[in-house]
Length: 88
Image 1 (cartoon, rainbow, N blue to C red):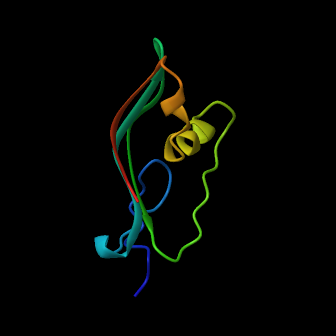
Image 2 (image 1 turned 60 degrees about the vertical axis):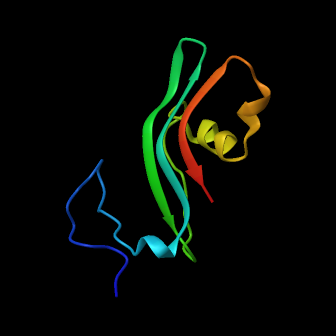
Image 3 (image 1 turned 45 degrees about the horizontal axis):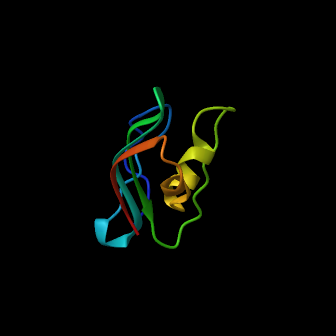
């Protein structure tokens, strides 16, 4: 069974379809702001188990912010507002 379903473009790429039981990381409606500046808005992502996953994009798009949120490094900063759910 292929990981990819029909090539229906979403944000420039194919939809990844897999059984939710095969998910090792699930992010639901994650939003993060530094003071008045919004860094992540309503991010939803499921990462399949036993797959290589990479975050790529231009400078300033939120890659490091997301990784810091996953590692709970924003918990140390009182100016950061975080909402949503991260399940590992």
